Length: 173
Image (tube, rainbow, N blue to C red; front, side, top):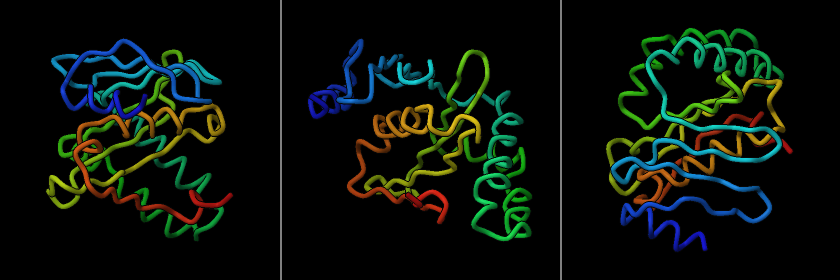
């Protein structure tokens, strides 16, 4: 069960795979008890791994495209450009240093990103950050794979409260 899996993760035990009901098979890879990657078998073959500094430019492109092409439908273009200017390569690398940042990979292409960090340094609260998917990959299980990974991260598991800031676009049905 998912609770047993969470307990195993907290105890840093190694598990080879498990099934999330209705979402496909997921394999979590550990190194010294910490998640280093997740492979999900959904609509697309998606691998989730920790961000590497060499991913910064690709991640920046994914964020900028998400802001302009997706969020831009609900917000003024000027505001989206302000956010694009905020997400510099330096900002992305700094976030990766203070958070657990992951990338979703399909084949050899990074197609999404997401992060989790302590909320204002708290050990009891965490925050999900910068979750973006390439527009053409929306609906292919990438977002679910990223969220599943973030939900298994140590910052999520130890938190009593999770902050999830969101745009109007993200909460539309």
